[in-house]
Image 1 (cartoon, rainbow, N blue to C red):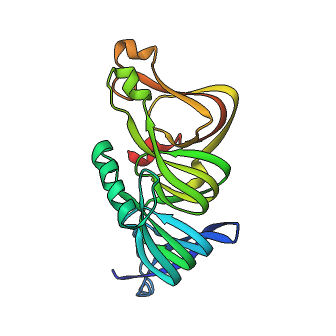
Image 2 (image 1 turned 45 degrees about the vertical axis):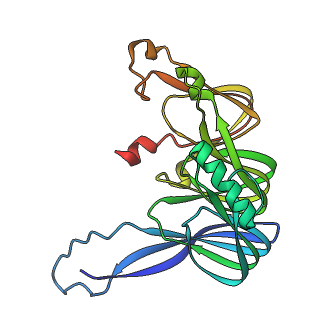
Length: 256
């Protein structure tokens, strides 16, 4: 059966004259059902696309995320290490990438207009930062707009736990603005936990992002003595202090 796809705004978030809009595409059959016959219908899964409305500032997208743009927007390669754009910044980014294994650069767009990302079946999670930093899980970053810098964070937690000298490189957003992350989990199922001098321990890769005011460590769990943790190595992720954690407890359901 053939379908036609219709887009509608699923959710949006605005700040500082910029806006992020999630467009969801749902399928409807092109042919009407036959009268008098029961027609079982299995529709394709929905697709989602992010529209980034830039109001005279800067947006940063994950490389390869852009589908098309409208307006007066200039594109510039930005070094993953936080350096400037242009050829010099691009080459410095290449050296950093070679040393860390990180993606070579992000793509910045400056001016006024709208950016549209490639459609995805993943869900898009919108959030806002107000003069703080956010450490993002690998592969979760999609875009940000506003007074935000996209750099890198070398997470030594797991390396220290297993005795390795190499840390895990993750995206780090710093400043004020709005951002979009992607996940198999719908935004309604996320829990944004506010920690106030507390400890959170998580068994499994359920955290998509956390503010860097939190101390992060990887520790052996009690079950780890028997090697029965969900991580396969009996480790838990521990977050201590004051800050926010984006937690997806239903992730195993969506991956099953």
